[in-house]
Length: 159
Image 1 (cartoon, one colour):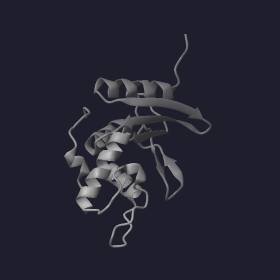
Image 2 (image 1 turned 90 degrees about the vertical axis):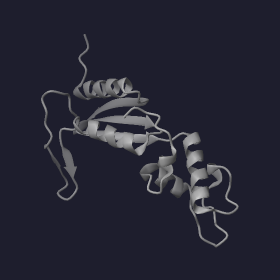
Image 3 (image 1 turned 180 degrees about the vertical axis):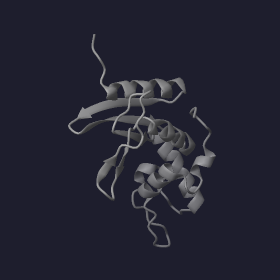
């Protein structure tokens, strides 16, 4: 019988927990010289859902990297669950979510003659000569929700 690596065990626990809570995800483990990690991908997460997932995932890292001293601190050791050196959470946004975000941004900022589709947003220039950098605005809004796009979205995922 094959024994799973610690990283594979952690990935399995994470996958089961997220799926049991209605969160569509892909979870993969990786072992390499100097450590191991788990990568988690989630689709169209609301910021609050992402924050709760980050809190849950933190327990699976047995430490943290300190960039000031360029060292790894073993400050979160636990014996009751499998742990890895790093856990990475990646958000992927669908075309539908990006389009909804672009439409909200166009409305919020009152962009004139803005392209209808987010793919054409690129470095859209306003009539006042200001660049909106549509792609950057979309990415920033999806990542942070700082202007309120997320408040217009219905909760889709269990937290």
